[in-house]
Length: 386
Ligand code: HGY
Ligand code: MN
Ligand code: MN
Image 1 (cartoon, rainbow, N blue to C red):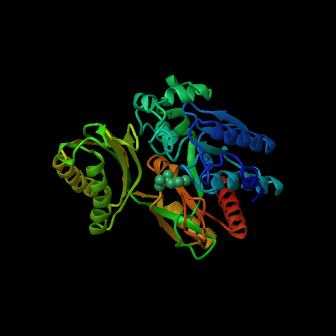
Image 2: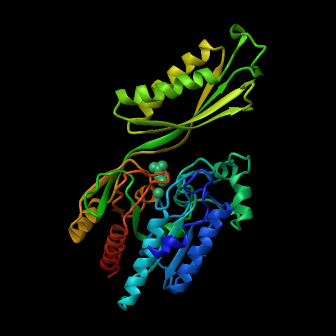
Image 3: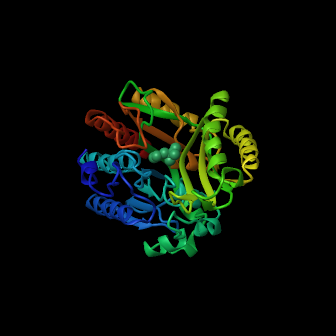
């Protein structure tokens, strides 16, 4: 899709894929692209109190039909996760305008802020703030890996963090939300599927504290090396998840100070657990305590985000599977749609990803399937707009 081609060089990550994170320069470039594309379609763009972008086709109003997704990525993420939903929404608007369609209800394309939590650690940041699922004071104090607070980053991006918080007026304007997204697995054997559920999932920070020391002069019996219990927890996460039919991932581990010849003082690791996640974390925390004690270290475990299993609106789901003659698709990936689902009738459309890979540069969707996704979305929006 040419709209996606526009973004091909925005926020490329040195190691491959993309690095477009909440309120950073690359994401600001993505936002500028969105504003320009929305303007070309006669959509009026506003930024809400939480940094989400809303492009209105006609006057904002109650019971609006809203579609969209996010533009930020995970570190090293693929080209489709997020931008495909936004680009497809813009393209669907073009198709509807080309056939002289005018929505009979308020209509908006939305871009939610920091859906991946790739910079400040809390996923679906913009939709969680909008719905009141994230405390604004906690949000303002979130820090990125360089220590900058979300409040400062948002302020630099022109979003006043003092206004963060549940946006009842904004929420009440949404009548129905439909998000198109690239599939993040390999279950679809047709171009388009309709979302059924989102697997429960959460993120926990394990912080190990030991004694920083010299790598050469500190004899083994004197060491209190937090890297050891951290390493045991990484392996235990997989072992415990396999006994509970759950998913557990440690994708981020930070020793401090991080010198090659330095026994670290602390090691932080973040666990992403999905499906029975609370059972996984409970057992893993016990293993962490034992491993830390064995090395004379301490450990704290902090929940940073959690979302229960979400079932999308069954009547809307069935209406769309019938309209599109498309299969239902459960997913293990979180989405803003899953946050909104607690407040408004919500649906998701998925576009086939033949590699099944996501959150990595190999994430892919064939042009023909992307086109099928746009046609399906336009059809859904036309049907739901009348
Ligand atoms: O992490 C997720 O499941 C989503 O891609 N944000
Ligand atoms: Mn993602
Ligand atoms: Mn996504």
